[in-house]
Image 1 (cartoon, rainbow, N blue to C red):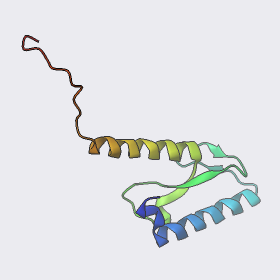
Image 2 (image 1 turned 120 degrees about the vertical axis):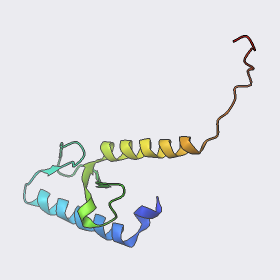
Image 3 (image 1 turned 180 degrees about the vertical axis):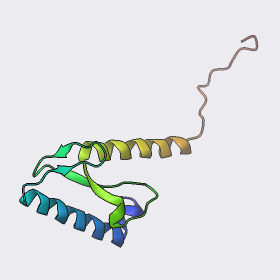
Length: 99
C-alpha cells in the first residue's frame, strides 16, 4: 500500500464513497465504473479509485470503479515505475566490429 493510500484523508474518502455506493444499491440505483462506464452489479467487489493521479485524496477526486480497471491500471503504473528504475543490462554478447 502506498503512502497515498495510507493517508487519513484518503481513508475517509473511501469510506464516504463506499457508503454512497451501498446507499445507491439499497435504493435500487445503478452504480457505474467511472473508468469504463460499465455498471457495477449490486454486491460485486469494487475499488475506490483516484480519478486523477495528481488530484489529491479528496472526495472530488475519487469514484467507484470495477476491480479489473483499477488493478490493471495500477499494475501498469507500477511496472512503468519499476522498469524505469532498472539499469540497462547487457546480454554478455559482444557486438562484432564489422556489424
